[in-house]
Image 1 (cartoon, one colour):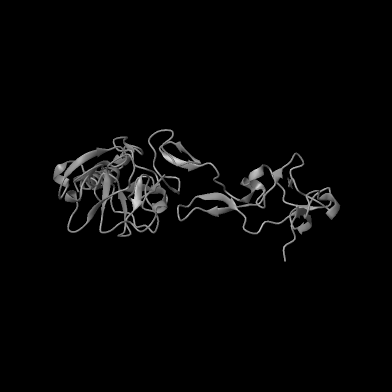
Image 2: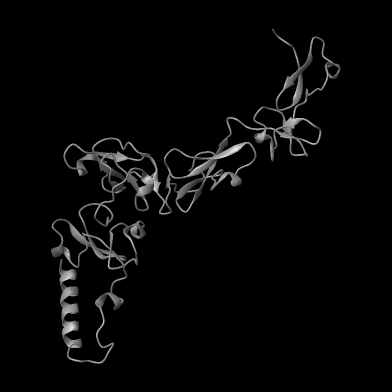
Length: 289
């Protein structure tokens, strides 16, 4: 491409002039001139926010261009991170395309298609924009733009990479996320997200949410009671939602039931007796054979 050729020519002339004993510092690489602002990287994974590959500590795309003449098809669109990118439809997409097994593997705002490649919404507005038998897949958000795929994406099709390693549902305003989540910087964040179990209340686990690379607090299917000061093994709690076996979270931070008992004499309803229960010591009820 022209840009790469010019860079190579400049470097060659610089080396030639420097070999003639010009003062140190008289020669400098064009990449340091401030004309282009490339993303600094150590490995290709550092380029995840925009795409491309890491070459000589800069994220470079294989569809960079200086003018339309550098593009095999389409036009050269200015790009803040790559100077210019060849694009035939929709927003510029730095090549090469990222491979993915889930949406969280993709650059920000992109999803994982059925072809195992990352796609950006805006590739198409209808299937007529796609090649061959591909269809224009719409993620179902408020934005009608979609991406071309041979089939409905098999891997978390409704989420898009947030640039922070997670695949989230996109949102456009407060209230556009599902109940239990909030719109933050264009992506839905679950209210009960967690990094580990210490972020969750008692009797809950920190578990992955599908394959979105996001963890949320979920009920422990096998909670353990602890010995409370009254001698009963109870479920500890921060709120009543922690009382998985029923009851109410009281001020001592343990779950209590209204019909607790220690002996049959504690039960005042005719026909009821004190039945042993793991998390309450005993509960008044009818003993059925």
